[in-house]
Image (cartoon, rainbow, N blue to C red; front, side, top):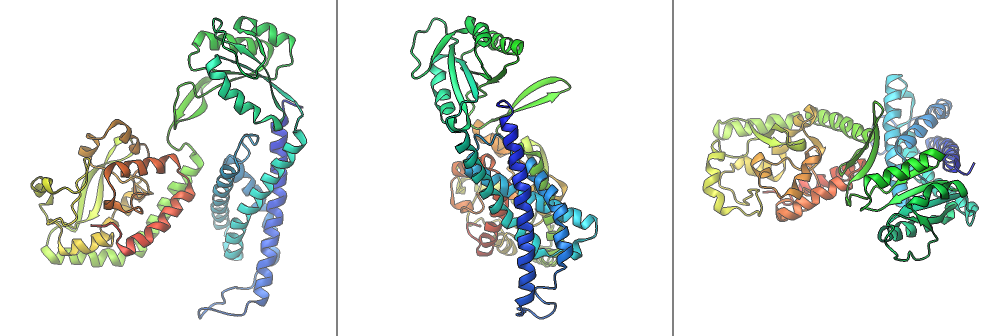
Length: 480
């Protein structure tokens, strides 16, 4: 029972979520029905703002909503390691899962052709409310479980490692005592070192490990130490495997600061991978779906702007409407990026003559009053209309709506090694740099902002950046 306690906690969390989601859906549906009865003010002419609600149908939808939400919460990692997750991390995971659940629910409703019977206000309100109710109930449940397990030792951990590396891990493990975790003792892997390990019971050295596992009730062996060799790790693993004790290894032994570890199975071959870029396949798939949907709709809605801009460019000098330039995309793959032409036809040939007037440090060329820019070009640059053709790059999958700006291959060749990591995520039309001043910030800060985006990426960060881009575009902030 003690070994399966994390699974029991996860099952309890899922049962609680099912109850909370059901209650939230019924409450939101009831509130919407009540509003439909008392709301009489129509802000715009035409159909009523709040149409009559098919209450019975919407209540019956809970049979679909609950499994969809539980699936999204499960795939969103909200049930992973509840003993160690922070409340702010849990909030972000729940919020992301609820957004995914909403998209799945909309897709199912469209496929089953029942969307016309659903209330959009119910769907949106429920999605927002469920973020709060699920997160609040989850944190309350965690506090209750912790209180029940407080001072109850149920999971004995034996730590193996060097004196230098043992102390930080022991401090972390002791902070989880309220989850029934106990540091049973320490096995020294550095036989010749006599350094004391404060607050830890030394049970022996590495040769004593098989005997210790036989004589004591050990639930798990954790190994830490960046200087431990493969032979030592294999000895510990073999000793644990022989007696069926769980074996865990400190994944920070490489000293990586931003990479996260992922264990995968390749036809029976166990592979431990480290990645410093987002690895959430489901969330990245939603990001791609959002790109296709919003870019396609934008291309249709903005077609009159495309037409007027094309005519203005053609009438000014008779040159090409579009400008195509090779850019570096994901991991340096090159592609043709499209823009409305905002410069004279021979702009690239004139660039070398203006190199002395570059106002941006680093390998990027930026000039506030660039003489190559046409009159129409100055306007469409100020309003960012020149970037709109990149929506086609988004549809093609070469770019995303949000991501680091795609650089020129010649600029990439001049990058410092740490700056090349910005190529590890698909480039985008907008990112943190665009909403932070664009040409008003220096090159190194620009690069650091892109890495900040990669390290903290989430669907909600993308949505927030898209909303922040709107006023920046309207006001022309930082554009030249």
